Image (cartoon, rainbow, N blue to C red):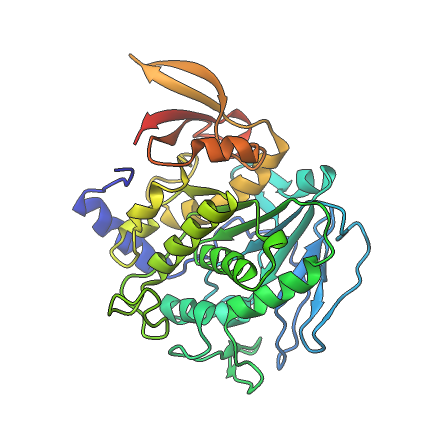
Length: 390
């Protein structure tokens, strides 16, 4: 089995650390000088959500007007119908009044980099679907519910900049439905044939559900070639708002829904799916480890040892920076280890720059990949991955 089990003492300590930070996005120190000025700000009484496109300098423009239901025309350096495209979904955002960007700045680690610069230089459209006002809940399960249903514990309320919550009768569908409708409209004329989704933490559920909705609603040409699960999170237990899709007499879990949808995409569309694990977020007793899904995907353990060993917060957050920055470099070296000797296999490990075909080759229950070099450096440039038996 691929899962890493932690001793109970370590789990208890991690629980303590997590309770102190109290945040899946955690507001870590990489935000100390982030490029927030470039992100559109909503008014104190307003709601602003949806797809934003980025240029190579980290500036963003809205790609869809959710008030009018119309696609926004943006300059080609933000989006072009002829370019390959990645759309990213962020996770839980409790008590946050800022939006994620691709700028990684940390003076103590001596790093200041725009992690999506290489994507733009290589001709990609880069977008983020922002749902931060919906995700701004004190309880992670309340934010999670909005991904799947408008009828969860908190409905579709959203948090305003003044800290209060508001509702609107027009918000009668889930975040996944909102994202699906925008993605389908914006990409309907994209001719690249190369579409990728990534989801960090709770955002993995959006990535998989949006891909499922594209397939289910007749947009097979837009089903992503690849889906990246960046330290994904699913909460435990059945959810009444999900119902019983498979007819087994029990309400579904979010993790099993994602597993079913992932398997459908893999089996029906040959979608490449990678699961990057960077923290112990699923080992804390509140998350569904979803271990049976591991055998369907390419499973990669990142060892971010340049961070404190018990800093689950930043280990969880830094995976998205690691992934996007990795497009700037060759894929990690795949190796095997015997008697402490590392030997290259001549094949690539997994990263943003790894080919889709290689990711598909890595999927399944034969091997997993464990980072053994580059563990003490922030940059992915010197990473090596050991191939291990499942």
